[in-house]
Figure 1: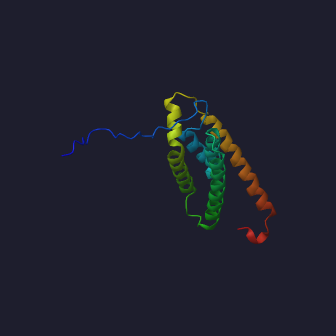
Figure 2: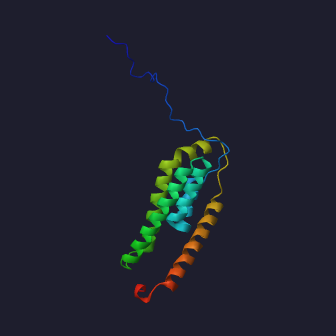
Figure 3: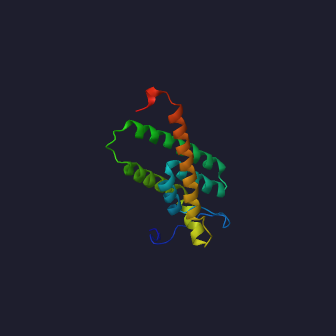
Length: 155
């Protein structure tokens, strides 16, 4: 007969704890959500990329930027092709939910570990400022495209 106790913890070491440099300053999930609200999917990607850089993961930072830029382009194509009856708020809500969910899945453990250590997070005002700058940049690009586009592209 075996003497296995089903309530005994496993003998193998569990490595679920996330080790994060306590000097790393990250944007919180709330800050990333605010960034998406004020600056679109691209702003959320920039904030996630900045978090990855602070965590010492430059390849993931680059990938976050590339995917958020592609997502923004797809979103612009959808906005251009969908009927006007589709409310714009629907796009904003979907962007916030998707980006905050992704950030929580990808960076949530690191963010929570820093918060548990009592480390200082990046300011939500900083996230909003970056997002507003990105919004202004996208607006400038859209205006430039609208001015230089042939008349056949105009609605």
